[in-house]
Amino acid sequence: MPKIGNIILPDFPLLLAPMEDVSDPPFRRLCKLHGADLMYSEFISSEGLIRDAMKSKMKLDIFDYERPVGIQIFGGDEEAMEMSARIVDAVQPDLVDINFGCPVKKVVCKGAGAGVLKDVDLMIRLTKSVIKGTSLPVTVKTRLGWDENSINIDEVAERLQDIGVQALTVHARTRAQMYKGSADWSHIQRIKNNPRITMPIFGNGDIDSVEKALEYKNKYGLDGMMIGRAAIGYPWIFNGIKHYFKTGEHLPKPTIIDRVEAARNHLTWSMDWKGERVGIVEMRRHYTNYFKGIPNFKEHRLKLVTLETAEGLFQALNEIEEVYLGFSFV
Image (tube, rainbow, N blue to C red; front, side, top):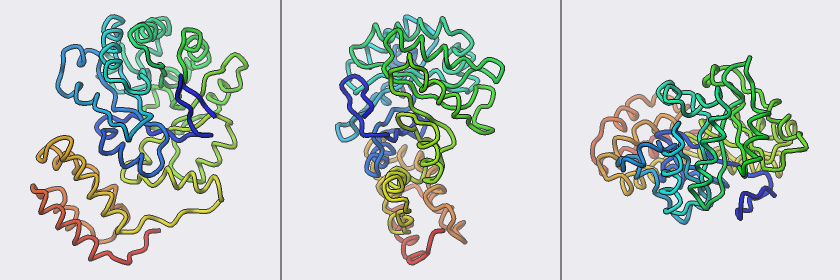
C-alpha cells in the first residue's frame, strides 16, 4: 500500500486532481462520497496567500470528512513559497503539494507551474523552501518536461526524492501539449522502474473510462492514478473504476435520480460554503456535465443557468427528475 508520511493509502488509490475553479470543498465532498481516496485543493498562489488575498485564503478551507486531503501551492519565488508553506502548515491538511505542472501562460510567465520545468535547479530550490516551511509531507505534481525535445522527468524524479519529496504525480504530457494530444504514460513507467525511486509514483492524463483505468493499471505498474476532467459532472467514476478492478463488471449508470441528487447536493454545499449568490452563479458551469447525453435538454439547461434563487433551482431540478424519470443513460 502506498504511504505518504503517516498517510497509508489503499492499494492502488484513486486521486482527485487539483483543478482550478473545480476542486473546491463542495466538489471534493461529492468525489469523496463516490470513492476518491486522496484529494487536493485548487492550486493556490503563494503570493496570494502572503497578501492575504481573500480568494486564496478561502481555498485553504478543508473539512475532516475529506481527509486525507492536500493543499496545493504554486509560485516562482523561494521566500514566498516558504512563507506560504508556513501558512498552509497552520491549517493542518494531511500534506502539502507543489504545482510544477500548470501549463497556463499567466502562471508559466511568472516562472511558476510548468515554467519551472525549464530550470530544474530552481524547481529544487523552490521545493526545498516548501519543505523548510512545513512539518507536513511534501509531494509534487508535474509534467514530463517543457516539450518533447526536453523531457526531463527522470532527472526531476530523482532529484525531488533526494531532497525529501514523498510522492510524485506526473501528468503524462509536456507543457507544449497543454491538454491536447495523447498522454504518454511510458515515461512514468520508466520512473517507477528506476531502482533508485522508492517514493509512490502516480499517473495522470487521459483516464476517462473504467476500461482505460484497468488497462493503464496493468500496463504501467504505478502506485495509483489521478483523475481530473473525467470526474467533472461524473463523480461516480471513482467507485465505478474500483468496482471494475474487482469484478470486471460495470456498475449501473447513475440514473436521473442520482444525477439530480448530485446536482442538488453540489448546489446546496456550494451555497453553504460560498454564500447563496456566489454559490448559485459558480454552480452554473457544472449542470451541463451532470446531465450530458439527455435529449431535448436545452430548455431545462437554460433555466438552470439563468435562475437566481435557490427555490427556483430546486424546483427546476425536481422538474428534470420528473420529466426524465426512467430515461436510460448509455
